[in-house]
Amino acid sequence: MKKLIPFKAFLLLSVVILFASCTKEDVDDPIDNPTDQVGDIVSTVNLTGIYDVAVYSHYAYVGQNQSNLSVIDLSDINNPVVVSTIQPYGDMRKSFIHNELLYIAGYTEGLYIYSLSNPASPQYVDHIYPGDECSNVFLTDSFLITAGGISANGLLSIYDVNTRTLIGSYTNSATDETARGYQCLDIVGNYIYAGTNAGYMHIIDISNPSTPTLISRYYHPGTPGHAPWLLGLQVSNNTAYLADWGAGFISVDVSDINNPTLLQAFTGGTDGTQEYDVLIEGNTAYVGNGWGGLLVMDITNPSNMTLKFEVNPNAASYIDIALYGNYVLAADNGNQMLSIIKVK
Image (tube, rainbow, N blue to C red; front, top):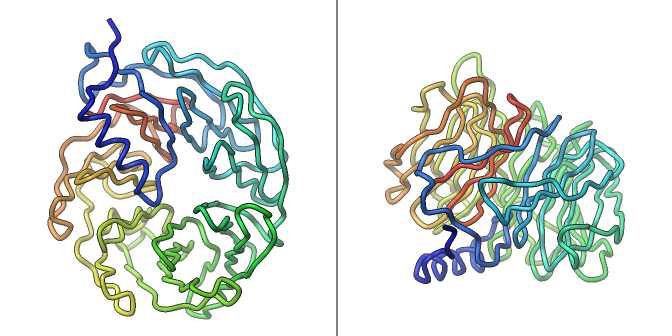
């Protein structure tokens, strides 16, 4: 028998969704099956080219790279169903949902925007071209920010969230960075935290959004033969949590934005380090670890993060994740499927 998530747990989840700066979900009373066991993959959906997943209401929006975007009804968590597809132009990368709008980074084709007023059938609203490759997107109540610029220098473009007019931009032209494009970002207060293809985290002041200013950088060299590549990050309680393909799952003290300092670099998954994505909820981090599957981490002490458990099925490659109540939705690029995992 299905039941609603308990009230206390739902209240905590609601607070996290309201205040966490980097969540990709917007969930109303997510359905839970109490017979599902923590750590189990409770269902899957075969999807070619799967690359990204975001959640709104009882639906998952799954980017399939150069194919399409599939909308999946999650009302029955053990039997998810594809209910519609859309086909934006471009090579779909990351997506973000804000105020009933779905924003899709289309790489060389820019940013596509769809209305979710009918969540089962997204409708085209608008298209923005930032002037260079668009790999990711992040929104606040004031700003829409695109990240990319992989072909040459990195580029962050800042738009008014309502009018979608360009306010300002920041170009990464650091000569000591071998790959300057931006891949991931988070925003806390007046600061953008942005990760590059060379493994650098930039902290950028946007208190005057027309003239963004670089405050500081952080870099972890990774392990020999495994080059840094910063693909996901989230900031929580003055700590930046980095998902770096070549350096591991990294916690960085950013209480002094002028001097970000390493707390820990965790590389203890069964199949080593190849992190692609991270989501923080309270004292738990969910980490998409590529061929290492899903890591569920205790981050109560950011200087001594420990592995609670991992989910690592054969041939899986989890490159993007989203939270849906007591479940993680994982974009499994190895097995070409969306995997739904009970995590709590």
